[in-house]
Length: 226
Image (cartoon, rainbow, N blue to C red; front, side, top):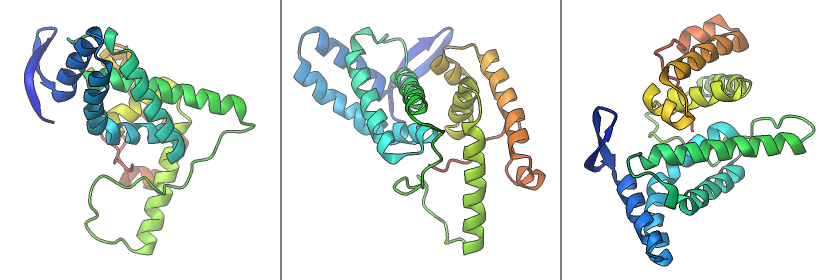
């Protein structure tokens, strides 16, 4: 990600992303009552963050239509709350916390109105980020789809905090420091949630052959599929 300046986090000096600079600028525009200009500049943040936000939301919701709705709602909420944005924080982490909470609220609403848990939707419309190196055989594609469905189903069964830790750490590849900032927990607590989540996933999957091919160790990383 392109960076332009630095900010301190404790004793550590870290690069500031463009989104954070833009958020600080938009905050000042809102303070000066320049809402039209602020909205225009916020569109730049949306353009930069939309794909990543949709990928995270899809890990929770598995429904492209709901993903679009919750992502737009999260961006709107972020814009409305920008006056309270702390400029010493990173916008991406601040926004991800808003997005994750929006996804969890949507899941709670879905559960309240449904007679049973909604099954995972087909993966149409959510293309992988990386280019395909070659076409897999029908057998390999079927096996990969089966493994992906098993993993997604297992992750869905995790408690909320464990699921969020797994999605952010293993699916999104974020370090424990950033996951702790998003979740509002200490790094040690995040690691405990990850350890317990991995142990439960092994129990849910209960297939040694599959586990050997998809490492779920404490330092491992799941593949991204959305």
